[in-house]
Image (cartoon, rainbow, N blue to C red; front, side, top):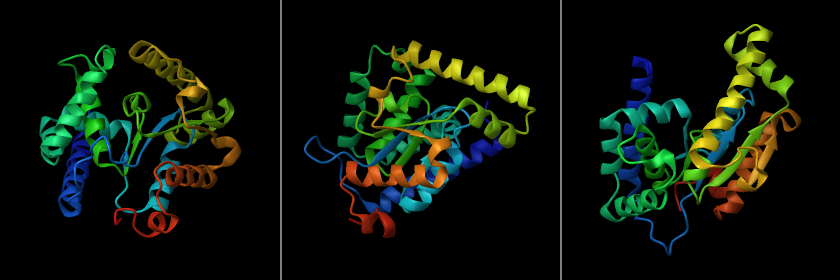
Length: 242
């Protein structure tokens, strides 16, 4: 369940996002226009995801935003936040979101009147305007045009990272990492009938323990530039100005 602090962050992020859309005045995406730049991250627990997304956001610059799983949950649960997001879309964009939702019918995650459907709608809305780094919650399966990235690392590395981040004793960290691996695998298998480690699901899979955080973030930024045809200078200075 979200905390008051989570609610404040969700409200702030949504408000900032809506204001950016008004300032940019970006036209609706149509089937003939390139897909907006979006990164969907799947990750193992303890694979330095927060550090990587922070470095990636700094590299890409404005107007990129990071939407992690906790923030996505909070926005999806708050009707006011969802309404704000949708109201920033014009009719064509709203229609495109609804068409995509219909194309996903049959997957348990988007059944009518469920929280997971609301979550999928939030992710699709954010992706419709682009410049979003969306972490977890099955984003790689819902956002078909996103750059799909899998972050992984050796078990011992992930245990060390989890113990450091959360202050757990090593045995507790080992237990939590194993439980997380199992739960995330079961989630993807149940909701999407896929195997989370299948390499063909992703555009790139990075071993964070081998590459390190800076190199992993740089690799994703470079792939983003290639995938969405973004000039290097635009990425470095202001990817929102085309």
